[in-house]
Length: 160
Image 1 (tube, rainbow, N blue to C red):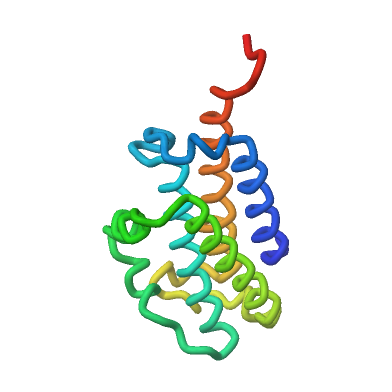
Image 2: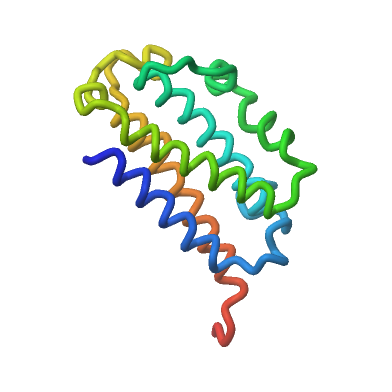
């Protein structure tokens, strides 16, 4: 697996799913649990910000506070609530900025660092950065993309 490609394809799948959802439906609840499309994107934005902190550690930069929050059980709820007053467009823009920054960082991570088992003890001593990207970021986006696809099926014209 090439982790940078996995990040790119995960984002591409997500953007394709988002394109199918009418803008006026971004705040309709119960797309994923009680979450709306906007809430899902707020959630995924927080994951992008956490990934940036992880990647910073692999390119010699200092990680910020969000990484310590990422491992807390209330991370998702706190991060979605933090973006509650933002418009859907603002949430999407924050997501896109974070994703683009992650792509810059990911391209700077040396090849050997991607396969360094045990470098993420909070995730599991037996895992490496590629595993984290595959399971927590790529797979996660694919799962939410599927939920967006199911939700957008409601709005297809001429559906039988």
